[in-house]
Every structure is written in structure tokens, then in C-alpha cells.
Length: 194
Image (cartoon, rainbow, N blue to C red):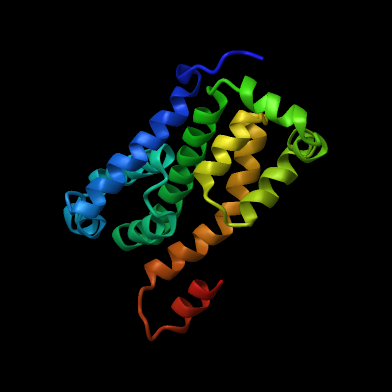
């Protein structure tokens, strides 16, 4: 077994560091997600860049709440643009967390898997798309799942397609709910409930 080296886990450490820094900035009030809609009002290009930047930050840190980000985008942009930007942002977020796991050395993970029944973990290779889809349908943290599936070396396109398709229905519902943010509207409550 190889000797444990901290640099082998550098991508994971970067994710943890980004999460801690962003969490501290949010907790201290230096960054306030409530001000994003006011900053980008009447500036659609800036709005898209800021939102994609937040998706990149979410991919690295996992601190930004996905549902809140999707709703904020739908408050700032019209419905078709909000769907497109959130779709691209979701793919970016999924890709970053996957890449962090993929570029992490996994010798120690493989030694742990050797001690446990492989049937649980070989399913990610054998049933890649269905496994990614099913795991993301559970609603677990997408960054942790991306990191884990990247470390397990699931094929990238299989991972991205399965994960994105599992997340997309909820994203669409949140965009529609956020776009028709009227608490007296039955459409809002139906999509929020879904």
C-alpha cells in the first residue's frame, strides 16, 4: 500500500478550503446572496456572468444553496433565459465537483474498497447512467456525489447525463415557481410542492 501523501488529496482540500472561506464570508455578512438581484437588475449579461460564477463557486465549495440559486436566477431573468442559464450552471457545477474527484489520487480509496464487498461499488461502472440518475434523485449533496463518482472513475458523459437529467425536473419546477413568485398563485404552490 502506498504511503499517504497530502498532495494526493489536493483537489478535495481545495473544495474544503473554498467551502470554509465562503461559509465564513456568508456568516460574517461580507457576502450576501440577497443583494445579487439588486446588483444585476437591468444588466442581463452581468446577471448571467454573476450567476455562472456562483455556480462555479458552488461546484468548488458546495456552500451555495442550489435551490436558492435557481430561484434567484428566475427572479432576475425571464423564464426561457432562466431555464437556459440554470441548465448550463447545473452542468458546470456537476462538472467541477466531478473533476475534483477525478483528479484526486484514489489508491487509498481503492484499498478501502478492496476490504469491503465490491458489488456495492462496481455498480457505478456496470450501471453508470442508472446509478448516477438514481443517486441524484435521492436529493443528496451534488458536490459530494460528484466528488465520489469522480473518484470511482465513472465515465464523465455518463455521469453528467444521468446526474443532470435527475436534477432537471426539480430545477424546472423551481424556475417556474420563482418566475411566478406570487404567494396567492396556485401555480407557485403547485410547482413549489413538486
